Image (cartoon, rainbow, N blue to C red):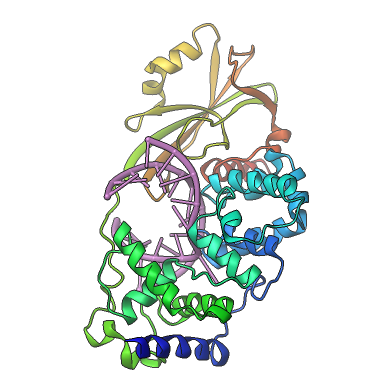
Length: 357
DNA sequence: AATACGGGGCG
DNA sequence: CGCCCAGTATT
């Protein structure tokens, strides 16, 4: 068993040296700040999707102190469109912690790194190995897949037992003096060769000893135990125009898009037309003392998220006197660019802008 | 232990 | 439409 494990590690490092053609701007990066930034951006995010965001952030905030000094709204604007917005909030908190507690210098011990907001076991191991040559094995989607297939492990990866088993194995396989190269190798290998769909088993340097291949389990592994429930939600966005101004608010509730902005939102349990919306209690309360005229009703648009399907409709209304909306901001159209919005809303705004020209 | 959290790409 | 992506925090 020890031999087969040694073989696995050696082959992987060899593949990395001879055949790995994957290039990314942060590969071989020595600055822990840049490594950290790339890892946060790439959590549950494809390299191609995260790349432009990485470039933007490095350009705007070349070091932790710069990021720490940035206004939160500005940072959210840069993050807009990338998703999982808690990452942005936590990243800023971590930058400020680094600036104050560590005087802007990224901490170099695993426990210190892991203690920063938004850094879990994967990201801590990545920074520790890539940035500080410490012997911590990364455990991400690629590693789960490569290990489960090569060693034929059918333990579900989304369980405590699975995480322990794969984590222990990954750590055993790690050559302590080459942790960075090994971690890089196994992730690239998972992304390029041992891919989720249609892996390149024919040319895989590990194929002869791959348990999944021998047992016809390649498309079964890795095993996941849970299947997610997707719920439907119906969002009715009210763009209320007072001269050139529009009401917006920051989403603060524990829900999707926390810390992003929106227009006045009335959520319903099913799709509604304008006359049904007008019957809603929230709507009647809103306009009980103020007359309005309907300017536009958009077609329904759908957005598919991981756990929910959002059906959105935009109702543009015009009023002549202000509404009593204490927790909303009255913002001029031009200034909308200063605020971060979810994609559903930016898409609508952009489509609207096109109509004007 | 289970669940929520975005957006995009691919078959 | 389902699966997956350099996962983490919260309940």
